[in-house]
Length: 341
Image (cartoon, rainbow, N blue to C red; front, side):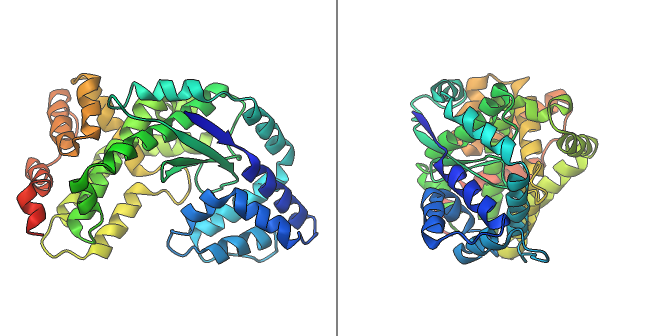
């Protein structure tokens, strides 16, 4: 059900090392890098300020003095390339570790946290990624060689997290009403995207990679950010609610909503987005008051997520989203609303 491809990372590491040493790799070598990293290239070429040509330029120039890409994503990738070359021995050890991994058990671990009949057939493409430790894209996964592979448990937890996203996406893509909404350039599409992000990341964090919410189980920089989020939790939930309120206003500017959503769903430090943290806390609160099966059902019935969360939050005394906003979100899913959009 799950396979790992390491050739992309191996080829890219060799290319970066030769480039850093002052050798100019041949075009055939670059083409091999691009061919074996096609998923990485396709994923990042869709990001704002990033193109295939700029990705290639970053691979060529990452180690040049004074080179500073305009895009924050490209800048993070360049720093990742520098780390990979500087830590070449560790990268080789990581490749050796990955060559021995049997990923089939990870898929079985994830299936218990997804609706029944979820097919989990995917490929993990290992690459060198200084921006994302892991990501899911078009049913496949990208995974960065820069991570800490000294703990098999930590690696399996991270892969399980991303594989859960693959299973989540399977159902989301088969919900025609949800897809219609998500493909709009409207405020309400941002509202739905935000709610879906909270649910998807929350389920993956809480059930598949719970260590990501424990300060004593994560690196220092991550632990520091996690501590700050815990301290400011009520303010972060208020920001989440504010986004919903803005997105549901009539004739709201889509780009304004989209940018506000990005501040919650993306961490340009590459550590932990706010939405991941909030989603995990929401699932944690729900898990105290609802059976897991009912929570997992929200994967197929997104409209049930916020009402179930609010019910649990009232019982536990945690943050409750404005019921009027929750009702407005759920009204979006009504067929007559879709027809009159």
